[in-house]
Length: 339
Image (cartoon, rainbow, N blue to C red; front, top):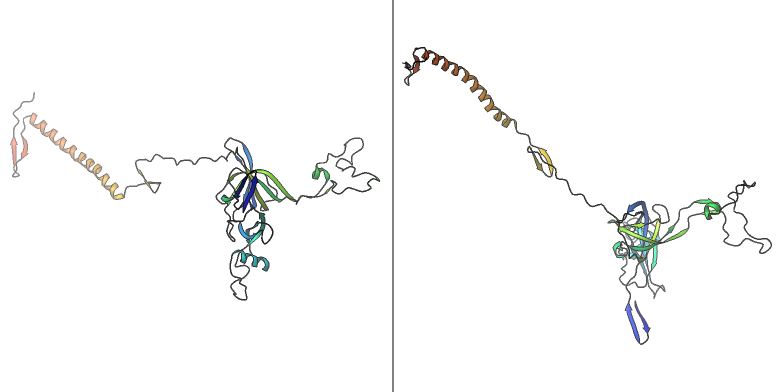
């Protein structure tokens, strides 16, 4: 839409883009979190993913510009909504008579519909899904509209915070009484809108100036504060401004994996520590040298005893027997005299 304004001798002309500033949401959960400055804040999770443009109203046809949004899926819908959805998806009109495979359950239909007025509809495409990041960012100021929880019949003290009557001077039955509800002859009636006991809750309520703290990857807005309605109730989230002093939500840094000390007899395979055991054959081979050394030690003991005996005989003058290469024995006499 092209707008123009005259200021003195100057004519200012500008073009406004599509200003879709609201989405349908569902209240998902409530929790608490901490900001980076250490402030603890209440958080409400509102799912706004899956908004689809189901109808575009123009100034020429309907008299105003607006975009109709649809959210969530309905298992089975009536014929009116079924035809409306077919038109939004630009699909040819089909019925069970022309095509038996087409029923009111084959084409998914949105469960909720909401209309949002905009200044310009340029850029809006029928049947497309609206991305959450195109509408909201962290730090936005929003208004949330929904239906409050039903409380049933409530008295004036709970409903409007009446003070009640005195507890003393015989007023035992007036502690939570509403008191006077009007005058006498003039006007002779009770004014419309008088605060009295009655049904409490189940009203359309708008909580203003809430703040978007963070947006998750699955399209959930983390809103600072509480919103009306019960869990899974329908909400309308509308952007009204931005917080210039925005403090983001604190998130714990990702912990680096610890490096464990791997023993010498362990190896790392696919980032997992496994103990490598030696085969039995290797254990047998490593044990053989020990057995051989024990055998050599046992055999060496009698040889040493024989040598000591020969040396003793030689010292006494007796010849010691020796073996020649041809196998015959040779006698040698030690000429040294052992004193």
